[in-house]
Image 1 (tube, rainbow, N blue to C red):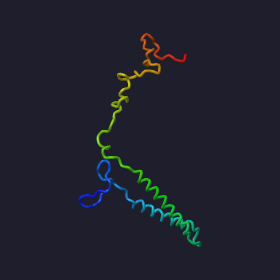
Image 2 (image 1 turned 45 degrees about the horizontal axis):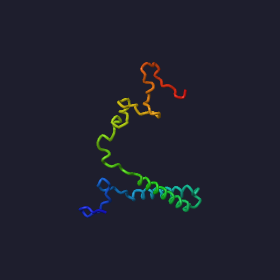
Image 3 (image 1 turned 90 degrees about the vertical axis):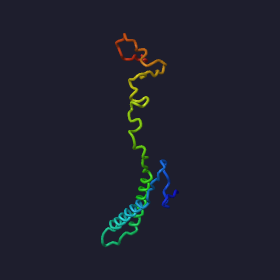
Image 4 (image 1 turned 45 degrees about the vertical axis):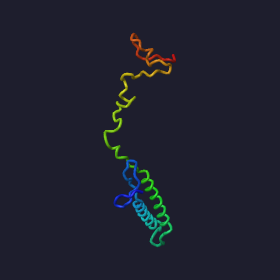
Length: 144
């Protein structure tokens, strides 16, 4: 870990050189504990089945434990998958925002050199149909 001028410790540096934010454990832990208490109390009350019977503490602790573990796992997985974008991605107008500037993109359709890729037999596409005297502009069927 690096130490700063004030003597405090900073966390690991990110690839951009600045300090990297670490996720705290307190928030998911508190959220899971509150959810476990709610699940335990609700299970204890609803599983009792009336005012005459004794409270079902066994089911309450089981439900509270399951709720605590599941909610803690979900929170930790959500925190691990969150990754902020680097700051340099939000600057400027974007890379290749115009598809006309991409080589082989929309800007090359119908332009010079378009449609000159040779067919499988080595001839240029439409070379057999390039006679201006023909009135039928449809290509001939090669299977006929």
